[in-house]
Image (cartoon, rainbow, N blue to C red):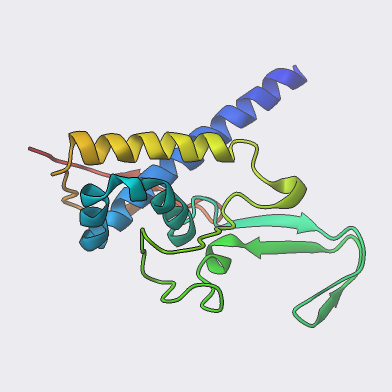
Length: 174
C-alpha cells in the first residue's frame, strides 16, 4: 500500500508540475513574442529557455520547511523546529540575482531557478520534467511554429496558493 501511494504521489506531482511548466512557459513566450521568435530562429536555446521559464513562472510557488537547528536568515534567528515558508516564485525573481527579473529572456546566462527546491529536498523528477519540456518546446517550434494563443491576455489560472498553472490554454495554428 505504501509503495503505491508513493508512486501515485510521484505521478501526480510530476504530471501537474510539468503540465504547468509547459503551459506557463508557452503563455510567457507568447506574451513576450520576441522570445518565441528567438526560439524558433535558434532552437539550440531551448534547454536554457526551459531554465528561464522555470525561473520566470515557476509551477511551484511556495514550499514549507522546518528548521532542524537554530539558524539565522536575513538577520533573523530562528529556533529549531520552526516552520518556514519559502516563496520560490519570489526568489526566482530576485533583482539581486537577475537583471530585469520580470521579463523572460531565453538567452539569459547563469539561470539557476529554485523551482525544484534544493539539497535533500531537490525534486526527484527535475531532470525528467526538464527533458519533457525540452521535447515539447522542440516539437512546437518545429511542427507548430505559427501556434497562437487567442486568450493569452486573459489566461484562466487555477486557484491554488502552492501550484501555479492554467486551467485551460486555447491554441490555434495553421
